[in-house]
Figure 1: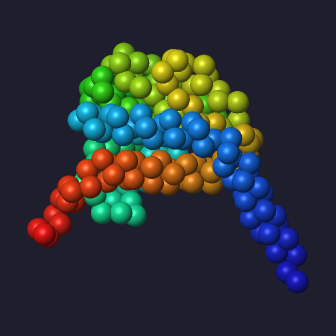
Figure 2: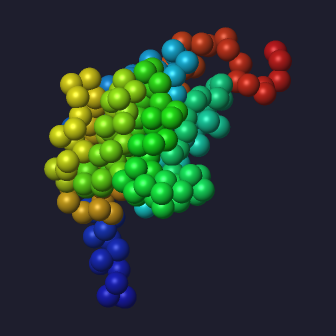
Length: 208
């Protein structure tokens, strides 16, 4: 047998074990976050998402599922990933500081009924900490999807904010659970939106 196989098997086992550990531990906070997002969306608010590296991909993944569709047909939902505009990101980083690349966008686009969805495996990223502070200046609720001990970002949260913290110190394993969290959020949001508006056809759907 190829000696690399045990390493691969071990990765699958570690990932599965962490997800099984999280399924009950994180379910209440995931449900609370999804409900907060449904409340925002039903009140003409939007979800602004952000993160760095793999977490930037998570932010974009989430917003694409809401803007387009997840697993069920329903109307388009308002979500904006703050990680996608290269001109805006580089101009802010160049003219000010990299720590401000999300905060300035939030101060421009954020409204009191909106939610900030911030991804950080460590909670130490300066631009995530600044994004949370900016969201608070706009009276936005914050959902932090984190790992390890939550870092400085977790300490910035207010009572009404929500942290979904993966109990691991391994970045890859944390990111794998973050993806599952995204899918849980999307699933619960879909069911809320469709169940609350069962007769509302999705935009672009053929008339009945």
